[in-house]
Amino acid sequence: MRRLTPGQTVHPFTVTPEHLGFEGYDLASRIAVSHHYWVVDGRLETYFSRHRHVWPGAA
Image (cartoon, rainbow, N blue to C red):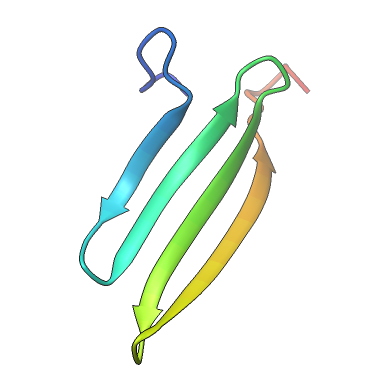
């Protein structure tokens, strides 16, 4: 989350012709959702997962 500039809530981590990956952040709840999109055999495959961002002692 420290990579975000003020007001930014999305961070792309992979942008290729075969794979698009980005994280969306809800800073108030400290939840990140990782989104993945792949092109496999001409079809679009998707996957997402939710994560809670916690530093030691902040749980």
